[in-house]
Every structure is written in structure tokens, then in C-alpha cells.
Image (cartoon, rainbow, N blue to C red; front, side, top):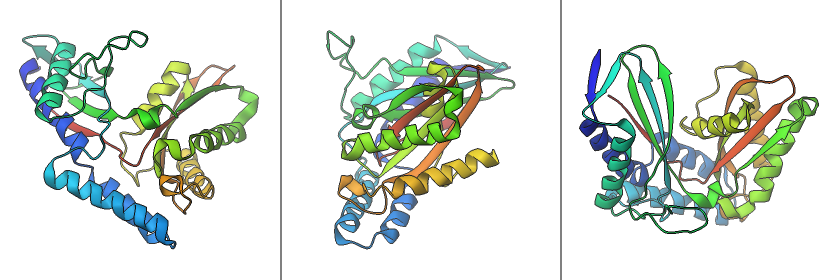
Length: 280
């Protein structure tokens, strides 16, 4: 049995929050550079160069790559041989976020009630999802999700008869509707199956993957590639000012569903795909 104290969890969450907001993963930077190489026209090239420079500055100075440092989504994968000691894991996660956003001088954007709109002052509470597995693994992934792109995300309960063509059409319609408002070039997390809520969670979890990674299922692998190509033909382009790169990558996660349903969720992420993880 592995014992992990809540103090250690809080310390790691604090660090992950700061790093996620300031330092983009290498795979994200490489996706920018690949997009730059594909652009021929001066304006989209200029925008991609600015995005690359912004990411480099965030890394060098440890300052946020975007002023919207997001609402924190946390994915916890915990084994049945793990015991959390000295407190409550959820309280520990929120304490780590509070400390991280304070020490990192990160913008605090969470309100305590969606109607009353009073800021909580510390960017908590987090949105936390737990997955229970066998063994002594404790893996924590932190994703600060900005709402410029979150507001353009969408979900639809398709009919089974809509089939794959209906899935593709809905995804493309969502991107077209988002236009420049989600700060393209984008990353798309897509959840297919389960229930309405499960599809939405899958679409968020899909964004934990790094650019260039593909679904293990051959059919979904091919669909990710097809969707990326189709979306980039839309000519929305960097910052919505036209160009060859509207989406940097597409990630799909699926789950069994009911015979009467075909839920599809699309979580749109701006070019700043921010997530950091740790295994304790």
C-alpha cells in the first residue's frame, strides 16, 4: 500500500498550475512550427511567429502565455493500493490551486455562483474528475481552461441514424460557428458516446493528449486525420484572418453508448493547449 500525504499533493498542484499557465509542452511548440512552415502568405505567417514568440517568452520569464489563466480542470487517476493520508484529497487540490495562483500571480477568474457572479478570490474550486484503477498509481493532470474557447464548445445528442456523417457535420459546424472567437489555430477535443455528460468529459480528457498523438483505434485514428484536413480547408486560419491552419490537431475519445443515442461533444481549445501532469 502506497501512502501519499495531502501536503505533497498540494505542493505538486501548486507547481503544476504555475507551469501549465507559463510553459507549453514541447509538442505544442512543434505544432506551431509545423503550421508556420505550411503558411505561404505574410499575415498568417506573422501571426504564427507571434504565437511562437509568445510561448518562448512565457517559458523564459515564467509569465502566463495568456491573460486568461482559466478555470482549473483536474484529472486524478488513483490506484486501489493508494492511501491518501493526513487529510482530504479534494481539499488538498484546491489548496494547491489557491497557492499556485497566488504565488504565480495568475489571474483569478472563478465566481462562486453562475448568477450572482462574486469572484471567489483564489480561482477555486477546481473541476475534478476521478478515475479508479488497480495498483499503486496516483497520476494528476492539471488543465487550466480558458473561456474564450470554452464558450465556443458544444454538445449534441445525435440520432444513431445520423451516423458518422452526422458526427463530422456537427464538428465542422461547431468550428465554423466559433470562427475567430476561439483564438485559432485550435485544438479540438472530441468525445463520442456514453451519455451527454460522459461525452463532455471525454472531450476534455482528449485534450490531455499531445499534438501528434493518435487514437489507438484505427478508425478513430483515421477520423482524427480526416477531420484535421477538412477543418483546415475552411480557411479560417490563424486569428481568424484566413490561412491554411485553422486547427493544429484533433483528438477523439470514445465510450460505449445506448442503442438509441449518439452523443457528441466538442471542446474547443485555443492555440494555448495548457496541461501538466505528474505521477506520485
